[in-house]
Amino acid sequence: MQVTAETTIQRPREEVYAAFADIPNAPERVSGIDRVEPLSDGPFAPGYEWRETRTMLGKQVTEQMQVTQTDAPASYRVESDSRGTHYTTDMIFTEADAGSTDVLMVFTSRPDALSARLLAPLGFLFAGTFRKLLRRDLEDLRTSLEGPG
Image 1 (cartoon, rainbow, N blue to C red):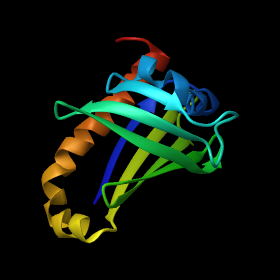
Image 2 (cartoon, rainbow, N blue to C red):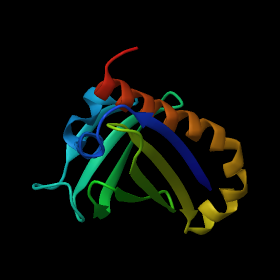
Image 3 (cartoon, rainbow, N blue to C red):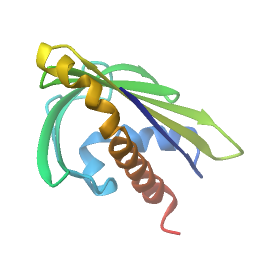
Image 4 (spheres, rainbow, N blue to C red):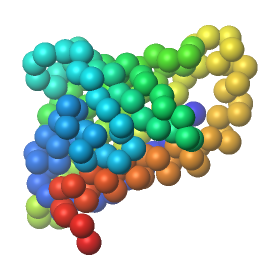
């Protein structure tokens, strides 16, 4: 399953990338994140890991995530393995009009375990829900950078 969401943020690309990559402070910017536990010291770079807890569909879920690629301030990739499925999130930041940034989030899930492969055909039922969650995350981040309104 692949789900995308996008927005334009009225801030320079370097500022937008830095805010998105500021994982320890993500709960202050994204309403869907309950808590973040950094597992790595140092900068946001390949190998950086953290545990992220969210409330999804009324249930708290904690996932361990790792940055696997960075090309600041153009893009980065985060990957995670959970419940027999490999998850990848690509964040792409493109300069738009003067002082603004187009942000594209691409979320991909690939079932690895047999149990996950058997449930994969039902993924389309959840695509709309995931798209809404991604859009809400992007809107929260946009608001944190631009201010309300």
